[in-house]
Length: 267
Image (cartoon, rainbow, N blue to C red; front, side):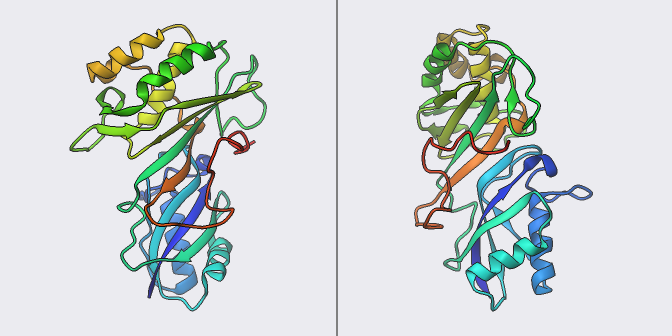
């Protein structure tokens, strides 16, 4: 029996989120069923984060114990043979016995993708949020500065955040625009429920002129979720990378490391 971590990508539009739920297809269930089909034994797969229905992942990390003579590369291929469309094990590697994908994670990087064309895009609607209104990108970038640093993010937490503390540390939020696409990149040591989608929704309100950049600081200081913008739709959110103290998945499949490629996911 060895402990294995896996780098996973999935299309969130095909699943009812990461976590196993009775009567609904989930990513966790798909992976656990693939392991059982492969080894004949039940397994529990632990994910670094519990993405919601419709949320995608390019760099989700999971860990599980498995009794198999297959090496790491063979194990990944064998699991993919048992997985349904929409989820892929990009890589597996044997790790220390006590590694845990969730509890050892030091931070995550998310991408929120927005289509800004005047007409509804005919392709890729499940992988980005379409906004028809013209957006003031300069104002959005100015507003994004309020979200960086360590502070109480209660104003961005939806109901259902069972946390002892709402204090989190975020790196500066970055906005990248290319033609009719906009990417919001958010990285931090942890996130409250719907926090990234609320950041995106608030920045969109700034871009539409419904909030001023200066109001974002007031919203955060209020610690009141009612003051922030709406929760942006799930389909625009992507989990890009999970960070650990130890090197994981060395090589080109380690996960997106920078801004290039943020517009390549989905259609």
